[in-house]
Length: 127
Image (cartoon, rainbow, N blue to C red; front, side):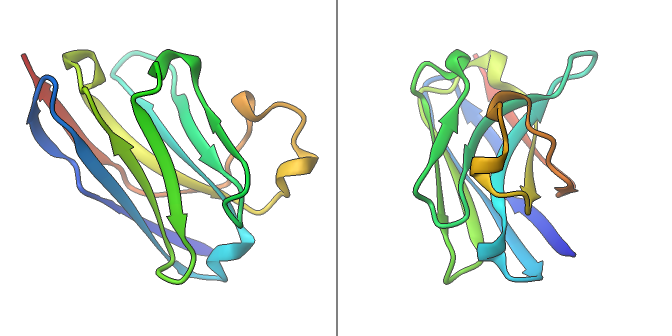
């Protein structure tokens, strides 16, 4: 079992940037593909980005318009989400998630079911 703790959220002005971090503990971090999600009140959870266990493959939601970048440092057991050009509509809670199913075994990353979740970190973008 892997435990995940997000950090790095906060209040930022529109056009600003943030770096979210997700620290993992428990089982070997490099055994998991990782993802970043967000979920606004009353809306469905949205997969923003995902990265394979060794970092060789990534996925991004089209809606991000290239503003977010996912990365990982397996030596630090941490996955990151770099967010730039933030907009008020990006305001919500952001979650990281882990899954041990190999990337190649998942037919559709956009609808992938991640098994392990962090508690979330709030991002607020002011206009």
